[in-house]
Length: 402
Ligand SMILES: *Cc1c(COP(=O)(O)O)cnc(C)c1O
Image 1 (cartoon, rainbow, N blue to C red):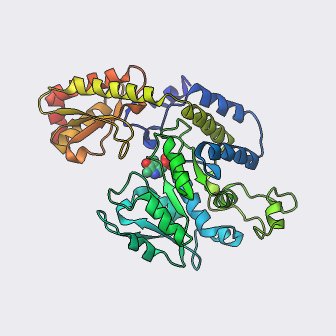
Image 2: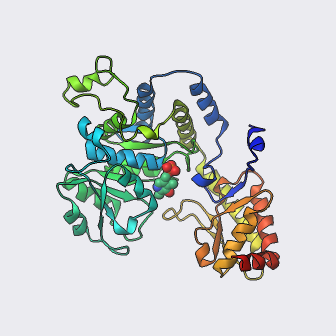
Image 3: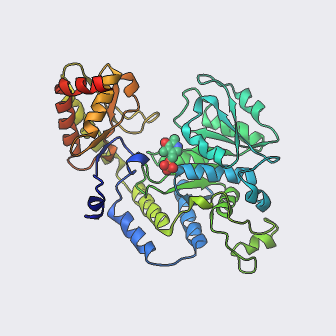
């Protein structure tokens, strides 16, 4: 790889944010790259590769079936499309126009997040229930009607949403599937088995975030009939009935015929992503997660120790709580949003550039998430932070620029 980025004039940076798509997601392990290289050198029937990969995802999660997508957001779009269209190829062809069909997806108002655009992109209209701080079970029941395609739930989001167990129970009592965005629920991987055991109908997971797969990978785990609909709406459908691998579905009366290129067709997944995701999943399942946690904690402490005692900064280690966050972070409280943003800018302009978590900078907080730091980078981040924080000049100059 040496050479290409250089020739483009694009500088690599240090990622102290965690698995952020805007920073290139993760760094791929050799085993993942080997799998992608193997897949890159051959031709395969993509539906066969998907079916085999899906079987492995199913075995790993305990779900009935699995499917590789181009990310969790793509997985959410495909999940919504499957819940709306089911096995109806004419409706598949019509999406995102789902008018007249089951085109509503129920969500907690307190769980509205930017990624729910993916559900709407399939043609769903979101029907909100509850308030950000309080939702009653009867509100979910009352929101479900003839036009309800699914209930969507975003794990680790919305402090006072109904428990997932209860959402599944109420939705299933009304014959409606539950789509779960589990992007933030891994680690631990064991959560996916728990969700599948609860009966969640489609679980969406990001491959690039924690699992170590390519940035443009993710997967769905869930009900076989819904995964079948996902496949029909995602895979290349330049097919003829006479030779279509799905012909047995026609013979069985499951579908009237093959759909055309579907709503998921622009969300293409290459054989390289499928291979890379599977290699990453295998490695992740066998990984020593306790060792990861210990290394992350030590790296976060390196940052906290370097910044503790600097004037105007409070440095704290926030432990993994397994609820909001499955990993430790170092948090710096600068008690001023302007100084917090100035610190983020100062490190972004350094050499090497360091990306800090600015999500809470509006409250004066800057975080270092240690999970995507490589060997030796924690010490570098700690030194750079301490230098910028002690040179108040830097921050105050930036302050007035802001
Ligand atoms: C990152 C994220 C996604 C999207 O995941 P991709 O794999 O990048 O598509 C969806 N939902 C949540 C909550 C996320 O944090």
